[in-house]
Image 1: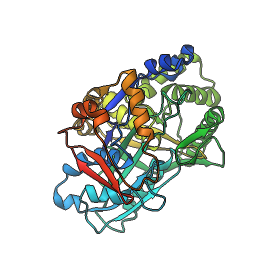
Image 2: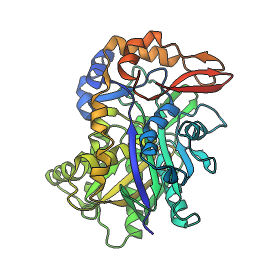
Image 3: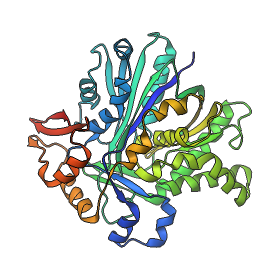
Image 4: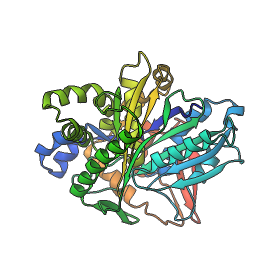
Length: 409
């Protein structure tokens, strides 16, 4: 059975901030800027949360389906570090606002930035099991980063979501079923020990990421006969905390496994990896969604005159990781083009420093566990009217007795 991603779309908010401007504003060491390889980052408005990002990523996929197809969605799996309740999954809100069939299983998974891949593999295995022929699964990775002021994480933290429809009609990515290498262990590299705090050891996180990439690929190689990191994959997509980290990871594998010369590594990076960074460098780190931002970047920006195999590395702090692969058909490029991702990213509102600081303060007021509060548009009315009003996006309207209320703009 052919199983994989039938359709995919991403949402990266309606506002963005220039990363170099953040460096200068925070008086960060400018000689470290080039290492990030980033241009912009998405910034959330106070009426955006993990639910709105998820629904806004998924709604176009759902609207493109006829009613009978839509009713074959039998499972909604979300992955997030930005849940709004310790017990209730945000999948319930998503299921409601997308008006999906009630004969549906809804739940959530969590494992830092690996969560999206865990959800995808769960969906793939469900479809491949044949327990419900023709059934589909909606997988959504969605996150809202908590602001990390006055350190080098701030320019990378972002908001957004990726929605993937998984079925036996893989028009975007057909999974190489069973071609997986995994590597996991306990490490305290990054964590969220409090509801409003993201912290960790960036050096330890980098080392863990590199260790997992190399060991995951080695285990993939043990399972997949004749596989070779240099030649098996036409393109590569990595979890992308920032683009410079991906460049370093690719270099590390090429050096340690094959003793490749620097000029050859650079050529290989430009050909097989750079297309995956096109959206990541203009959005930032959306945690478990970021790997799939990279996949969208490859499909929209690389050459697909014929089907191409993509190797994918997923990493989540703590840690869990996986290297897997799939085949992107020639038709994927045309299908993804319908989502107009590049156009929507270019249409985001470019914040100035004053607006950026104002949004950070407003967003900080929306802490976990609020019981009752309406959303007051007035402090960001100018941005709202230019980016959301009349655009048919889902937005948070307020919270009543802990129950989140949303409305379409």
